[in-house]
Image (cartoon, rainbow, N blue to C red; front, side, top):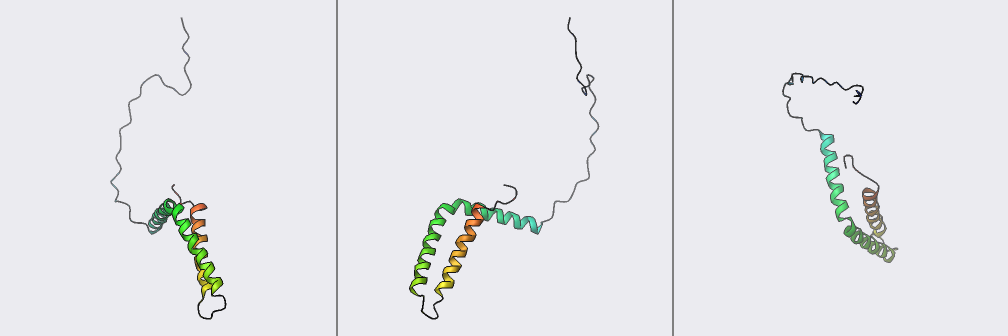
Length: 107
């Protein structure tokens, strides 16, 4: 009638499952500081990415205002508008890097 071809590695006979050996119960894992920091960074990244379209506009307008303020107070001693502008611009640059290039592990 027909020829039965046995595939390699397949047993026709059913084997009884091996008895299950239970391992002793382990204590719950302890809090790891590195994993806690990673979870916090992941949470901050997700929240930042979600609000980034609106926050980008708000922070960019603030940086532009600080730039105009720096130009206005250019030769006024004691105002430090240039350093204020650089600080705001650095925050905008760091957030842009954090949102666009950084991706936390596990996502």
